[in-house]
Structures are given as structure tokens and as C-alpha cells.
Picture (cartoon, one colour):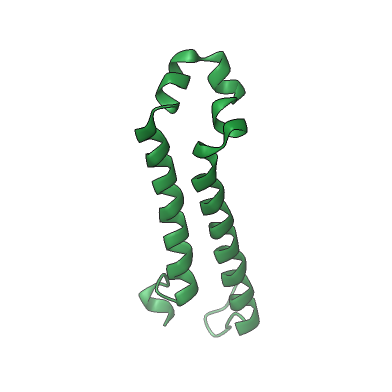
Length: 91
């Protein structure tokens, strides 16, 4: 437990920020790429087993929505890297 007078080292805060930004960027790129990948999206075993779900997933609007979520994740990573995603009390 951290005591009220004890502070987290600056290097640890920086390392955590770096890991968080890199993870968000990786997930964002993966989510943006997934709907347009033949192997991952078109030949997905879940979609092969459930043709009704495949019809929904192959819709362009659904692919666009998933890609938009990936772009949103990339935007949050960018904001976090620029320092805009921090809480007001941590300044």
C-alpha cells in the first residue's frame, strides 16, 4: 500500500505510459486491419460455423464500424502520448 507521503518514481510513471500507449496502438492497428483481412475475417471459423453471423460480419457497415473502433483506440493512444488523457488530479 502506498502511503500518502510516498510518491511513485517518475521513471515508473514514464514506463507505464510507454507500455500503455504501445499496447493501445497495437490493439488499434490490429482492430483496424482485422475486418479487411481475408484470413482473419472472411475465413474465420466462427463465421464458418454460423452463416447468419457471417452475413452480418461481411456487411461493409459492420467492417467500417469495427475499423472505426480501431481508429478510436489509436486516437486515445495519441492523446495519452501527448499527455491529454491524464486525469485532472495527476497534474
